[in-house]
Structures are given as structure tokens and as C-alpha cells.
Amino acid sequence: MNGTSVLNACELEIDLFCRGMRVPAEVSLEGARGVSRTRAGLGSGLEVVLPAASAFQKDIWVNVPVAERFATRSPYRLTGGPTDGYAIVDERTSHAYAARLPARPRWYSRLTSRDVPMERIGQLQGTYLGIYINPLCAFWNYSPALNCRFCTTGQNVGTTEAADKPVSDVIDTCRAAQDESGVTFVHLNGGFQGSRGLEFAIPYVRTIKRDVGMLVGLQLAPEPAFARYDALIAAGVDHLSFCLELLDPEWFARICPGKQRMHGQQLFIDAMTHCVARMPRGAVSGEIIAGIEPIERTLEAIDLITGLGAFPTVCIFRPTIGSDMEDWPSPSYEDMRRVMAHVYESCRRHWLPIGAAPNIEVSLVVNPDDASMLAEPSVGHYAYEAFRRFVKVVSRPVFAHRMRPYARA
Ligand code: SF4
Image 1 (cartoon, rainbow, N blue to C red):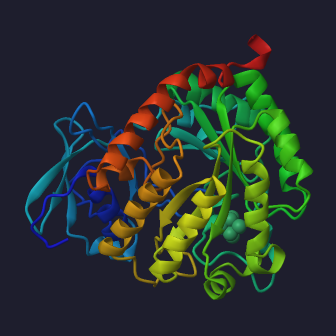
Image 2 (cartoon, protein in one colour):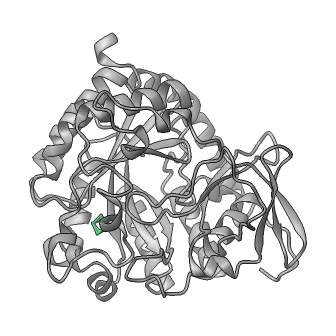
């Protein structure tokens, strides 16, 4: 970026992830979702919506870093307020981008049937509900700890989040999020749990599918007993994601010592391959973090994931306060724009049906379909966009069926 250009919504999303935003004390955030640090520690920001610029675009949801050191030096500044609306001013250009702060859901402070505030069970991240279901990721229990170096889950579970989340609390929270916030997708995760993680998740998946009827995603450390993935698929899981994080073996070992010691990279790839062969196209994803290892390896990782038939979910590295990497620099906009453009192109080359599921906007990452705004106009691009629209329309009844609670069917 040359300091004078006006960015499109996806470019702005990327730049906000890389540079963060300042929120002056006089700007009221009343009624907005609070800044919370939840789940796998990459979220610590303010939830912001960049409204669609035309009928052909969509709103972009972004969890903007505001607490980290790099954000205090950001050229972006939030202005306005809850009554007249907000804008994000880029002080390099004086351009003001329209922005909306999604409201804090009323159900956050309601209690589950066990008297636990629902926001301690799950939180909205964009338009979906995120719930960390398992006990604390076991990598934090080793001495010295084997946690992934960018992660802060060890500081969240049991403090900002309830340590114990029985199925009944999760069901109460899913129902509230569905009824009052129109949520269609719940994403369950839980870090490393030895060989018990997948089995532990099955009753959650089965009960949500039976009693609530949302789409359910699951993200856990890979386990070599692949029959457990078959059991999860039989229980109705709609989406499985695998956090490979980094492709370069040396960076993987350095940043993810637990994953290196307990799994190795190949297990992630094998588990992904197993699930891709058994689930509908577009139902499996591979997660990586961009901005730590050399960029060429990130591009290679994206191609590896799409080549398997999964779609890449790429987090832009955030040096979250309290993590072992809090003093690391955030990545450059130019590099991350290149990565996200590659995500879209790689999905296009493999005709992956990105963005087909209803109302799933993830605020912690640049969604692969957000990155369509980065594509150069070409016949291939327009053909893929037509294909994506076609898939979205024809898959509507499929998703409607999958979101029907079995108990009420
Ligand atoms: S596996 Fe790594 S990223 Fe996931 S919760 Fe554990 S330490 Fe955090």
C-alpha cells in the first residue's frame, strides 16, 4: 500500500489485522460486543463490520486488534459513536471508512440451567458461535509447557471462560444464540486431549444436531484412530478443521512444540485426507497461520490443503498480549495481501465451493470468499464466481435439511 490509496473492504480487513486500530478514550463502545480474549488466543479485538459497498458484495466481519502494542501505533482510529454511527479513519490518507459495531447479544448475560452466564460458555465470533468444550488443552500442563507459542488458551479457560462446559450448558447457549442472534453454525474446539478429545466431543455433536439443529463444526488435535472421525460424521458433524499452523518443519517444531512431539505434521495431513474422502466437498478445512514462517511456505501450505480437497483457513498472526510471542512484530500488509489473494486463487483452481454455507462469517480470519475482492478480473474468475453462486443456490435445501433438529423432525 502506498499510503494514498483507498482500500476495498477485503484490503482494509487485511490491513486492520496487520496494523490494528486505536480506540480513543472519548469514543463510546456502549452496547457493542466487548473486547474479549477467547478460545485459541488469536482473538483479542473489537468486532467490527465493514458494510457491503454494493448489492454484489457482502458485509465483511473483522475482529480488529486493539489491545496489542502494535495497535497503539496504528494509523487507523475509530471515530463516531453508538448514536450517529462509527467510522474508521486512516490518518495516512484522512479517508474515513464506514463501520458498524455489532451489538452485544442480550443472551450473553443470561444464565444456563446450571446458573452459568452464557457468555462464559460461548461467544459470537463474527456471525457464528464459538465454544471451547474440552478441559484445558493438555499442552499447558507439561513442564516446561508445550503450548503453541502464539496461543493464550491457558489463560482463558477457567478464567474468562467456564472451565467445565457440560452438554446441557452448551445446548442452552446454542438455543439462545440461534433464537436471538440467528446463528446457524456453532464451532466447537478443545486443543489437545490425548486420545480422548474426539470421543469427548461426540455427545456434544449428537445432542446439538438432535435438539438444536445448527450446523456443527469441530476443531481438535488429530488422533490416529480414524474410526473416531467416522463416528463424528455419523453423529452429524458438518465441518471438521485441522490446525496444521505451519508447513516448514523447523518453524512447526519451534512454534508448536506440543504438536511436533505428540502428532507430527503428517498426522494432520492424513486425518484431513481421511475426512475429505468421507464428507461433502467444502466440509473440511486446514488452518494455518500466516506471518511467522517464510511466505513461500505459507503459499505452499495453502496449495497442499486445497490439493487435498479441503479449504484453507488462514489466520494472520497476531502477537496477542500474554502469549509467548507478544513481542513479535505483526506481519506486513503486502505479504498478507499476497497470501489472501493466493487463498482465493488456489480455491478457484480446485473449484472449492467456498462461501456456500448460510450466514457464516468468521471475524478472526479473512474468509476465502472475502478474498474474491482481491482477484484480477479474468474469464476464470467470473466462471468461478458463477459456480459459487450456483452452488450457494442449489445447496440451500441441503443446508436447510442439515439444520433441522432431529428431535423435532
Ligand atoms: S493445541 Fe496449541 S493452539 Fe490449540 S489450544 Fe493447545 S496450545 Fe492452543
